[in-house]
Image (cartoon, rainbow, N blue to C red; front, side, top):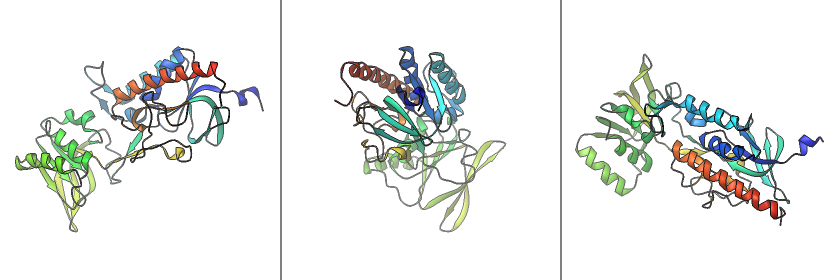
Length: 320
């Protein structure tokens, strides 16, 4: 085994979204050796978002790919090493170091930042993937303002769907809320929704399943739906899907990390998990706000906590 094989990295970051890239800027600027592993697209969900309009510092908005590219270049300028690879597991060794299996190969680190984010649950219907970011969205706060004076379809019947539908009424002229069975949102949210139903701004379609999102010349025009076995179409300028989030934490199930009821990682105020020296930030973390700006802020906080942890273990033997 070569010296390189046995080298212990200062910090390994899993996921190369905005939160990890921001953290890497901080760590590498302070000469903390940092390696980031990404299994898919550098920049995460932000990179495949057509336009980001609410990230501070860009008065005209910025394309998601451009923001991701800028974050990557900034992190790499200070010495961040970004590698493509999928994390399969994480464990803590007797000496306090951590082992991450990446594509079946062990990587040892003093600290780990988990910033793998969450994926939006998808409908899995034709048109959804092809029109993502160009008429199909999963974040009302991020993209609702693009639909001022437009007609929208919102899919879902839980708290998130109803809450986001209410939020979207400040932009859209009308919202069609498609609910597969019945509305399962809290009584308070249903009461708030009723006001907009009475005003004619929201129409609720119970027992209705979307079957296809249709576009003409790249612009969404309508959604094909099925109710009681009958097909029909609902005209719309955009579709917002709120059928839950799936945290990217499958590889951590046997790690000893603690999760909340939604499967998000629990941390303390320093963003440290139950495992000493293992941190989490961004959309994978419990209580995160699921916004790029806050994910970047959490990345900075995690980086400062990592620095503090590394300083501490210089004076305290690991494993003690």
